Length: 116
Image (cartoon, rainbow, N blue to C red; front, side, top):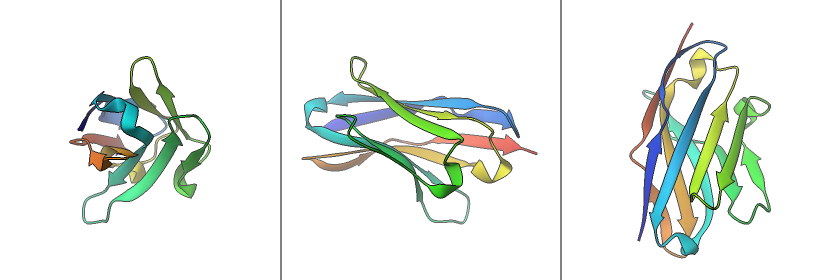
């Protein structure tokens, strides 16, 4: 089993920055990729960014390209999402995701609110 714990959400003004962290524990050797998704109120969950654990690729939603950066620290079993130039439309609950031989696991989510 894999467990994910997110942290780093909060309230920030438009144009500001936040960094989200996602710490993985359990069967971490079975993780092949990690990612961040978000769900705004009344909307479907959408992909924000993903990264392969071997560093082979990263993938971003068009709406965040050039503003958000996904990274991972293998030694800490942690994935990060650096969010710069935040906009009110980035307001959502952000969920960490891990994919591997176990299937898919989700974190509990962390709220990000961007005020105008």
